Image (cartoon, rainbow, N blue to C red):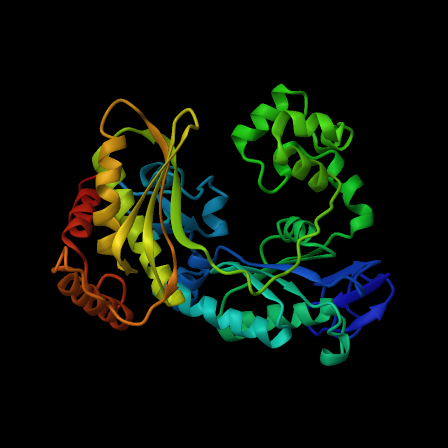
Length: 425
C-alpha cells in the first residue's frame, strides 16, 4: 500500500488517513498507486469555475452559465446541481428549481484561454497528452518517474495544485492502467477529486453498477440493454461475446471489453482533429423552428469560437438533429471556401434546419459541426458570395471587442432579440 498527500506531495509506503508531514486529510492510498501511469484529468464545472474565478462575488452563490429564460443551461456549478439543475435544461426550469441562481452568458474565448494554460501545464509533465475537449485530457505518464523524481500519482497531484494556483480552477483526476478505467475513476470523486482504479479490481467494482454506468451507454441504449436482460454490468460480464456481437454488432464487442475493464487504446497526442462541433440536448422536446434556430445560432457561435481558438477552418458544415423518438438526422453541405465564422456556419446550416423542422416532428437534440479542417491563414474570398469578406471583417472586429470588453460588448440582431425575449419571459 502506498499513500500520497495531495497537498504537500508526501509519498510513503503504508496506509494513513492524515498526512504525517503536513497533517492534511487529503490523502489517497492504493496498492497500485506507485505503478499506474494512465490518467484522465477533467476540470470541475469548467465554465462556471472560470466565471467564479473572475468574479469572487459569485463564489458562494449557485451559478448557471447559459442563455436566459428562453435559452438552456450550458453548464452550472456544483452548488446549483444540488438543486437539480443540469446541462441542457431549459432556463425557466432551472430558475424554478434554483431561483436564487446567478445567470451569466458564456464567454468561450475566456474559457479557451484557460484551457490553453492548463494544456501547457500538462505538456510540462509528458509529451503524451491527448485532449478530449477544452477542459479534459488523457495523459500517459508511464516511465516519467526518473524525470520528475516521483511516481506519476505525485506528478498528477502537483499538476492539480498548479492548475488551481496558476489558472484558478480545480480538476478531478482518475488514475489507472488504461483510458477507459482512468475516465471511469475521474468521475468517482468530483469535484477536486483523485481516484484510483486498478485493472485487477475493475470487474468486481463494475459488476453491481447499472449498464448506463459505462461511459458511452446513453439512456436509450440502456433501455435496449434492459429489454434484452442486461440490467447490470455483471449481466454483460457473464454474457456470451458472440451473442453480444449478434445483437449489437461492434458495439457488443466494445461492451464486453468495457464490462471487464479492458481498453487497448493508446494515449495519442497526434490524433488529427477531424471536426469541431457543438450540440445540445433539450430538457423538453420541441418542434418550434424559431427556438431551434436560436439554438442553432448559439451553437454556431460556440463552434466558431472553438475553431478560432484551435486555429482551424473547415469546408464542410454538418447539421445534426435527433427526433423525440431518437431517430438521428444528419445533413451536410460543402462550402465554396473554408471558414471558421459563426455567421457562415449559421447561414449554411439554417436552410438545412428549415427543411427538417417547422412541422409536427419534435426534436430532442441539435448540433452543428465543421469538418474538412485545415490551418487558418487568412479570410478568403468567395466569388459566388462577395459579401463574405465584409461579414468576416465585421465578425473579426466583433471578436476583438468581445476579447477586450467582454462577451456582451457586441451582439448581433438575433442575439439582441433573444435577450429581449428572455427579459419578457
